Length: 278
Length: 173
Image (cartoon, rainbow over all chains, first blue to last red; front, side, top):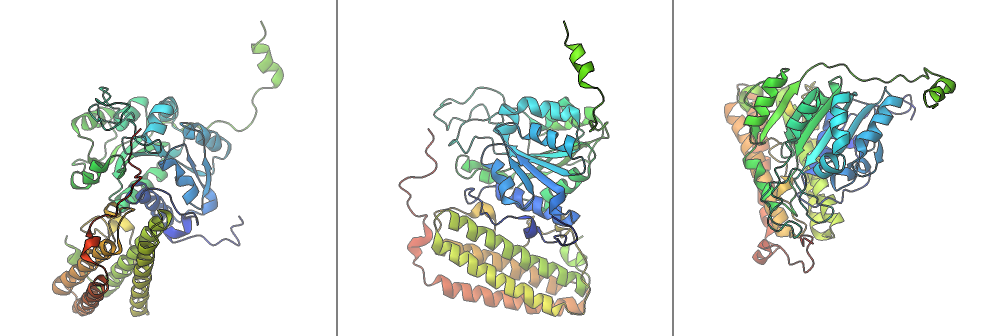
């Protein structure tokens, strides 16, 4: 797109595509879409300067619902795709989105290394504690006693991941939690995350009305964190451990070296091949 | 600081009012799309109409705003009492099996909250010009509520219950 002929969109709806989301009515993922579009409109980011990469699952369909460049990728590999894109096009604002299963189970290894690599991108996990697209199985964030799936009729018996704690341990430089019942608050967090230099991680609590209808009560339990954002990882760890997972806000933010791979070729093929010579 | 204290002049009040109506219109569009996709065309049409009315009201307020320079307020800085604008329907209240009666009841709740917002501002704003316009808007919201009540009469009370789906999505395998 040529910026001379393409006016900068100023309304959130300018960042939406013509495609109507197939998410279930009541799904929190609608609010994530709205929060992203509100954040981008606020920042007046030209559409052609932003890419949204996603994995597989209900929430990962989000890339098709925006008018941004997008890639609806391979299960659990959204971060890998996004890292490649960011390495090649460091000028782009790169957003990555997906679900808790996609990001923490199938893509769990990519997640922890993305945290420590600290490339300048924003990752949103839409956490509904269930695999929805495959009709309701326990995910890495499901409580151990959730017994509504025939695959785990007595619950998984496994303690769930704490996404924020995992991100902190893995070295993420920006960690936040938002709630889809508050798309405006989520948009505010997104703006801060996009502006952050480095890997920013947002856990967005996103109720699933179909397979986890009890999550529709989350709106009565969420609250803001009662303390300011900390740059101290020990304080952040204490805060995460002491919390019940229902506190919202930017938990941790610090300046860590941002990984920016060189775009040129430093070594000739001959010297690379010589390293493999036996 | 209360909302009424924040809305201390006419320009700010108009910015709030436009945002309130635009957010409501966009949400109604989203809800109409949800119902379209889930093969509930009757309710989709109702939400489409509600979006249209919200847009008309937003335009009316923009007309009121001519000659005023409205402040740019970030969506999160409005400080709405319920996280979103008072006339914005809650996505979590939606169900693909909902009826027109249920949709209209949600719309009535939205109009009631919008009325209450304007009414509160009309009583508490420190600016008399804001109080006068807020009173006018609160009366308009009351009229909308009346229209919705009449619209609701078209649908039987039996529609209070969700429709039956013989093949619901929630059948864990």
